[in-house]
Image 1 (tube, helix red, strand yellow):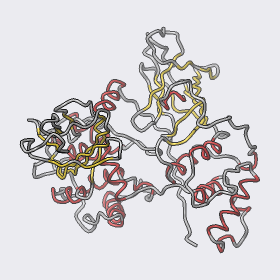
Image 2 (cartoon, one colour):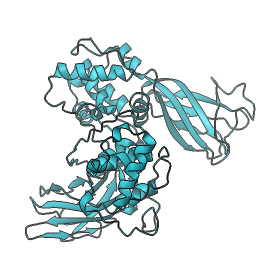
Image 3 (cartoon, one colour):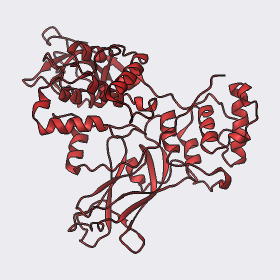
Image 4 (cartoon, rainbow, N blue to C red):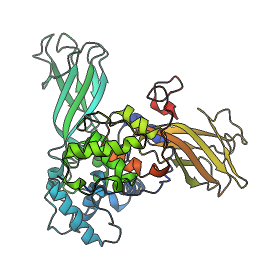
Length: 475
């Protein structure tokens, strides 16, 4: 039987302060301006510190905008984008060259075999950069058809050279690829044609017809485009260009899917993870390693059932874990932790350790010297005063939750050196369930097997909301 070893990596709470208006701009525009990395984060994905550091340097300007990036720097950044940290614990004590050799070896195993044996400190070549990107297709939603003629849709190429662009329309029968033309001169009223044009800044746009020259997609039709990225036309690749390309969520996501995808979570995998997380291995038979996968699943599900976890009973071990099943396990496992200490400054923010999971039953407490006191969640601080113990809750593009405090005039500032504590329940990740999601989550929320008592479950899942559609309102 194939033996699986799980590495549990403890990730400390990350205090990440970002200007609220900048975060809003990033979410709305979905583009990376020079020096500003609008990074989407999936469930269980830590802040990409290398990309953010490089983006900061680019924003400040200077030689970094013109100096070629080294292979060492690029491989470091690419490794974080591909989440090689899942396979490379204990990298902190390595030299730069040892780290490069280890990362380039792992990249070679993942299908990117152009860095092993090369000088880490030499500049990254344009051909090497293009080789990493050549099999990567960026796909993005363009929204919906208005039903009007001559519609134009911008692609998120940020002035980079793109190729093999394609356009798709879903008029109710799934997406169909339309045909690209140089212009609409030969197009008929029903021709499913489109044109791609570049503006003076190198931004690509999809242009549609007017129903006399080229068909107009039916109003409400879903639209999307795909393309491949080459990069800039300059000879050298700079760190700023790497930031611009790899902070594009469509490209980063496509890179991970191609070279280091997470395994979809089955019930058998989840049962095994729970057994190990709850330290129940001692209840397995001594010869469990000789059992078939089905026999091991039956044994583990029986042990978990005795602890009140009945989601595995008479279920298919190869079936995918559902969000509702996960919710039943997580309900009796609330997270409570100190997320940071106030520095006494206005507009403080603290990221919660929710790993991209939807959360609910959120409470925030601040200890300003006497004891922890519960503060009040508000949708806005406009009506708050200097003494109002209010806070806001916001989600970034990856559904990581942060709490925000006021400026002392609109909303009280927690006193300097005051610990900030949160308590909440986890529901499920926003996207598809994978082993990475659950490994990361179990590192934050570890049920104690000896004291586990089956909880009285809520009547329905997902957990009750306050009448809004946005998952953020679960908080």
